[in-house]
Image 1 (cartoon, rainbow, N blue to C red):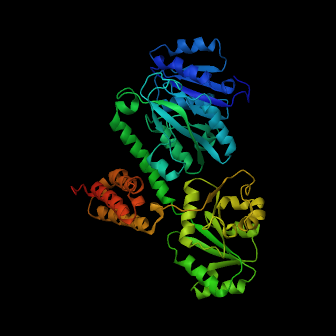
Image 2 (image 1 turned 180 degrees about the vertical axis):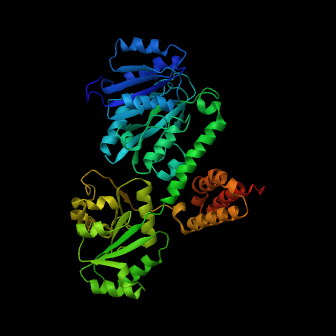
Image 3 (image 1 turned 60 degrees about the vertical axis):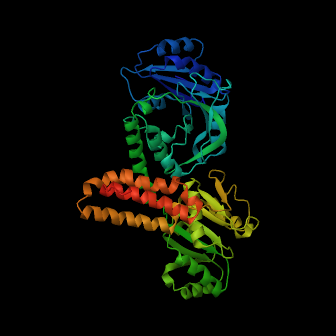
Length: 489
């Protein structure tokens, strides 16, 4: 057993019929720049080949390699779980026997986690090669694969974390292990499970070499039907959970002094925003003006909270999943603020700043995740942040702050897509009334997922309203087909 603190990363190598790749895999890992702090765990899943002999020859020279052979063949995720249990390092990675790394890949990914304490998994771009036992420096023909920056909604539709991420071992204490019943989608399921509450960080570099094996040589290609069914089942499960939490309750807190007329405009805009449930507060030294403005905007007196300053008690009284603090003079609509919160939430940050004008820091809006408002440091620095102070260390360096100056369109958070979600529920209810209830689960797995895939990945919504409508109609047709078994074209 290794002494505590000896290793920085534990690399889990699952081996089954991997004899032709294993030497290259071990050489690749032992060439890493942090090889002296790398623990290599080889899990031999009852392979009929000579993996054990190969590993034992390496163990004679390298004390950081451990070998376990199971009495019977297991899924790759069962092997990974064995590796998780054996690992002594604070960081984990899966090292597929047929994949390779840039020499500083693992060091770069661990550094990314150290520089981003809020993130729990780091991933990067990679090359795709069709050459067996290719090496990083071979100069072979290969394709570049650069994944997008982390967003929860995109992870639902594409396992862009890639083949060689590094994650904190502590995640398994909170979120459990990989689902070892799965054969091909267990990693996607675990990343989605974690991403609901945690943030990942992308390293915008090419660090890995992924072997794209010929059809039939891996589990995914040998049984494409099983692969598709398992992946869709995972996507459907988390898609429903994602859609259920896509509209977090937002507390809007307007800060500053203004005339009653200006307060009326502010509150009328907030009250007209129906895209997300909100509560409205005002922090002002002239509460009578804010009260008059609220009542002029047809607000009931009991529905607005007034406070003379931002205090810990005030922050703890806010009930929203996020609190957004807005200077009264900021030229930002409530709808934009809701979209701003959506960006912060989708990208996994605990806080974010938004300015409609990049050069006007005095009108900066600040969103903070609700559970972070109990921090005295946050309360002390809140007003300074709103007045243009540096917010990089707002949360003591423990939580990163996302800065946004331009909001991209969000198809999931538009009023149009919300109306369509209501239409889905109406369609399902109608299907049950017409005796189509047995087909509804399948419809949700295929039709609804297809609908949101078309909306998110069809790309039409980036082409303006007409392109968006094309994507929506295509997805909506698929959804109805799934429910009714129609032959609509």
